[in-house]
Image (tube, rainbow, N blue to C red; front, side, top):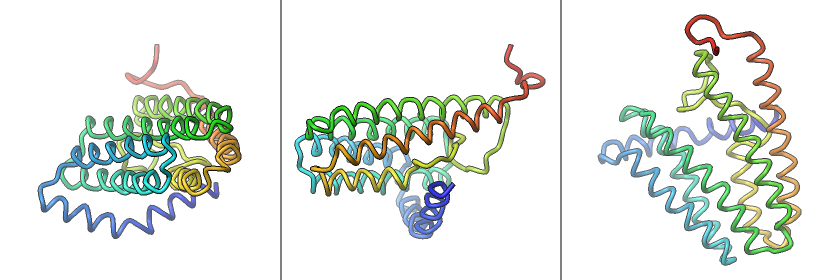
Length: 212
């Protein structure tokens, strides 16, 4: 999948700078939870700025949110990753992702139906992702991913979401078109995840992990 390759490529591209920054924060005694909290605050502020159509500020805060989100994971691995940290990270991400779409709908009335459709696509894709992650954990399935939850790739991943939200900020007058286009991509991602999960789980779990 081209998008999955793009996201993986971007992760590899920024990894040296991210790891170096994480090491500096680690030496300074900064906790991953603090980075997650500051990133979440920046994300919420980005949503508020977008709702008031202060697009330049929304853009800056959104990029700050994404930068900080990229740091808390590597920092957690240096300090010792925890399930609580992984939970807080994904909860913060989902909140900001949805909140920003809501903010666009508030600022651009013509885009409201498209934004509702995008949120529904997010809901389906997120449900498939979280359900797969839970069942993969139960079955001790590996995905080659070092993050807290087991991820299923697709057309819409982190890099694509960053680009789309940047476009919202730069081209608010085209928000309806952007939202509809991304809705299609997220819906395709949801379908990819459902198909992947159905195929991966086609055989009953064995032993103590079996679902009764």
